Amino acid sequence: SYVLTQPPSVSVAPGLAARIACGGNNIEVESVRWYQHKPGQAPVLVVYDDTVRPSGIPERFSGSKSGNTAALTINRVEVGDEAAYYCQVFDGVNDHPVFGGGTKLTVL
Amino acid sequence: EVQLVQSGAEVKKPGATVKISCKVSAYTFTDTFTDYYIHWVQQAPGKGLGWMGLIDLEDGKTIYAEKFQGRLSITADRSTDTAYMELSSLRFDDTAVYYCAKGPSGTLMDVWGQGTSVTVS
Image (tube, chains in turn orange, green):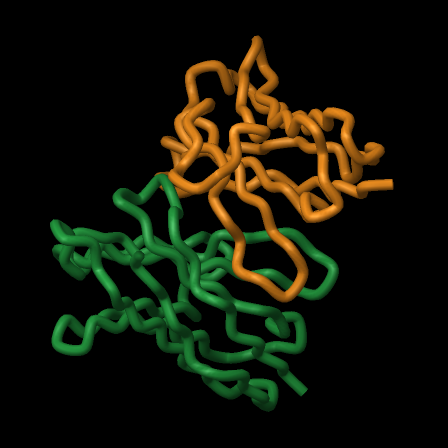
């Protein structure tokens, strides 16, 4: 099964930028999605197709990819951005979606 | 905006079966129930998101994660725009919050339900 690797945690001060990485074999050929998940709430899709923001997602959220690593960058981080963030791709061999282990973003 | 509303919390004994519903409503102008895929995702306490399975609402085709093969059944009722997830032979480690999510394909989840807590005790 396809494995996506994320750091367990990232910490950032308000107003600065946070970068959350997601590594996977040949991820450069995969379409990467990112979800924000706050405790007690439904997850929210914040980026799909590597870089596209759904309607209603602030421009502060952006996706990128280079080599074997995809990344979600949150500019001008706010306290309200504190959440777990998950990357996700589609495992074409096993024919189903796969999530990374998640990264807990802490706003200091 | 499309909404997914799930059924309420459940408490079950080991070996029992749980069935959770996920009603889709407030479609966009051009969408219908059968335009979507419905995914089910598990989050155990302190753990990350784990994909369980999906159903293609157009033809009823299902795909299940290997971890749940033989215990998981995902169905849908077109007459009520509702999808269901049934997990049998419950174990203590099935205690989790279960989410349904819709997507335009089997690869993406763009709107999620509020989650249903299942406690096996």
